[in-house]
Image (cartoon, rainbow, N blue to C red):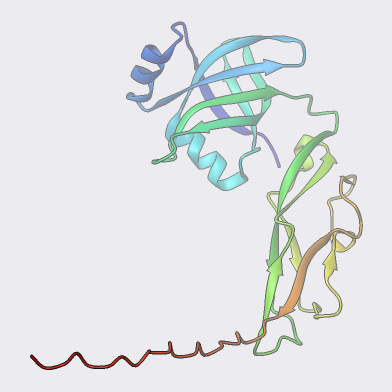
Length: 204
């Protein structure tokens, strides 16, 4: 993954009031920190930032256009509105492109098990995996072929095809996907309630 260019603007005013006014202009308040450098208050265009995250995931590698020059960084944290999910603030972490770092990569299942039965279904146990890798080699996702998946042989982390030079940070026998047989629900018929017979009241 090559760094995606993302322009920034310096942010002089801090706090909820200025941040709210900034968001109304289509920009997101952000911080850049890490690697022993000072914390810098910036803002980024909401639409441009959203396009990068949608294309490359929440830990996307970016090249931040700063006044002093380009700064390589990863999207470290995003605070979102709990209803609209729009980004409220972003933390960028400086990164050295020449040194491996730890990141989490999504796992995507591909194909259909050849031995799948009518009552079988695929259960994805692991949705992402942590690896150590150079920032420029991070894939958008790791694809797993599940055509050979059976009920007796789950796919484990050992079968993950990692990029060259990547180190897996998971146990080799951790399950990634399994084929499970669902059994029909046994519905027991509830007994009818007993109705006590009572004598009819005497006619008046």
